[in-house]
Image (cartoon, rainbow, N blue to C red; front, side, top):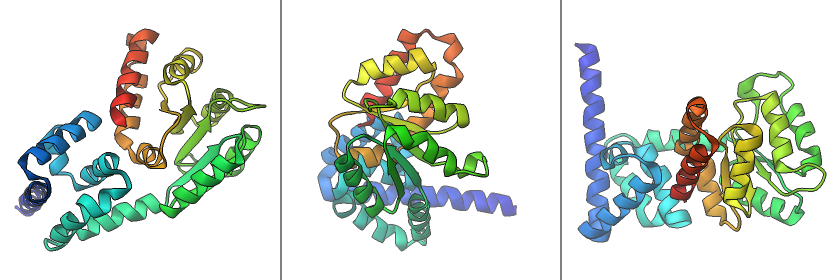
Length: 257
């Protein structure tokens, strides 16, 4: 009976969250505005509306993707206020704590770009290490002397076109060290880069197309759904040829931003 009570509380909390999100969005943007926001979020995530409005963590992630840096003031603040009244504010605080613990390695050959990335992402609570392609692997190895998977960087961001060592070459070495490492390529040629990755690495990896805003980069880093979908492609890759995988990865990335 105790487990049943806990389950009922969980259902009730989800219902309360959905009512708050729906109510606040309708108050702010009207019924048509709510419908438009939900259509965008379902397209980005591949999730159903019910899944989004009953999962506060997912909703926050998608709100930041839709509204960018204005998400807090435009949509999340009034919702957080109402959620705090039902004792669920700790959920949001836990998400922020987890976000602040993220360790990110970025390799690019342009110092100004690295400074821009580092300043922005550190303002979001990330721990950021920047380098160029030549030193990337050395830094990656030194960052984890224990060789435990959990001690590696949460995300590695690689510029595809770098002297001395390209992003693809760096990714090859990193994945040999840690096959589970999450990687994001930055490239001016989305389809060409994806095809090269699939051909040479036989692995679906996230690519963000240049030029991109810092908000889009932050959203990509946060978007666990993208990495989950790419991993599903990798798990089932023996059943598909490269053209099929390319089409699927393109669809995931283009719908994500």
